[in-house]
Amino acid sequence: MSELKSLHNDAIPAALEKATRYRLLNEPAEAESICLDVLKTDPENQEAIITLLLALTDRFTKGYGVSDTQIKELLGRIRSEYERAYFSGILAERRAKAKLAQHTPGCRFQAYELFREAMSCFEKAEAIHPPGNDDALLRWNTCTRIIERNKLVPREEEEPIEFPLE
Image (cartoon, rainbow, N blue to C red; front, side, top):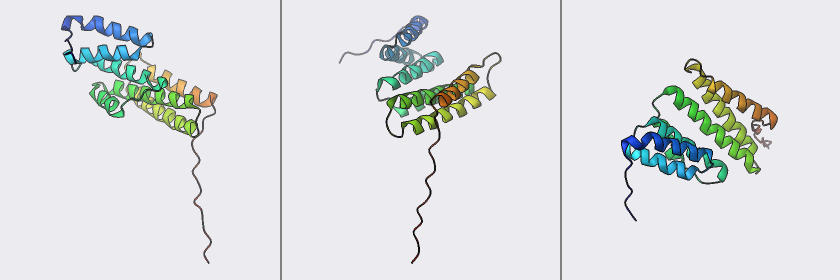
């Protein structure tokens, strides 16, 4: 295998624009590759970390396996407490949407639980949001509407089976 070439520091802004464009074109693998190149040059680049995280979550609906370990590691590298909570919510919301699209037994219950997890993350983010930024509130409302529109409900607790004593 050929050795990867390193990105120059002054090319990072243009590379990140390309990564965003590839995400918008629904080509997450290309965005992921660019972000990995940026992070090789600038390991703490917050925009690259977030774009990579989003590119990975773009793959949920495509049926690709995405490493929970990699996603958790990326979330841990986000410096802003607000953004960490917000993007944790995005992660759960996107997993929920992928579950909902599967149409298999139990997926609706899993989707509901993931939407509720996302809403909890968005509530945490909303509590510490920057002035003028209601993104977490908007995402919370979206999750609520999806739950209502799809009539999602939590899994019912099963009653324990009682055996008569003889």
